[in-house]
Image 1: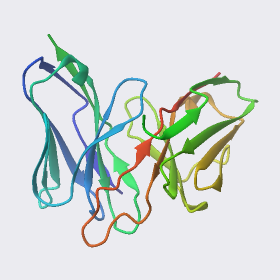
Image 2 (image 1 turned 135 degrees about the vertical axis):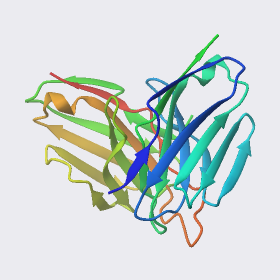
Image 3 (image 1 turned 90 degrees about the horizontal axis):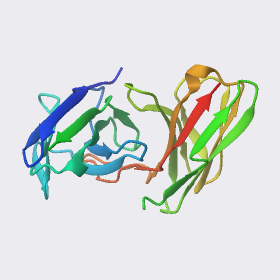
Image 4 (image 1 turned 90 degrees about the vertical axis):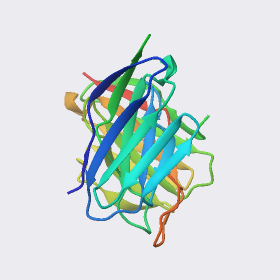
Length: 111
Length: 119
């Protein structure tokens, strides 16, 4: 089966930097996605990695190491509105678009 | 504004009721998905439709019955549910066949969900 692991909860201070890790063991790999989900709302797409390395989008960056089955999402200059759950998802094959999700990491940003 | 809408947003039903959830996407996608999201569990894929044809049924009990009349609309018909079926039900859409040797960024776009409570 597919296995996606990430920490359940994290707390960080406004203005700081936080790193949310995700490890995966899947039968195949065709991309890793990070989503943000505020309470009671839809998950929204944040970032995508398919090759090793760092992808930067403003305050958010995502890193991938395929050989280690590992990714992280880095959030800089944290704001209170960044308090949300962050979901790691893996697409396991080309030719289809099925995603396998982790449980999500609930991030709380404190003043 | 995600381009995927779901109705109703909240639903309370008894175990003997029959109800339906509706999803509509305005993104021109050809694949649609139903997920179940329970507290402290990963998003669970329930059903996948590609060009109106069901391509995945992830061992979902028969009390959940999907229907996809066209690529823009998806329904989930509910009957004789159990209290443990209480959850957030999310619909998503995407382009199909997203990758080749190297994947594309085309991802799934989610609706706001229906919060279901079964009494």
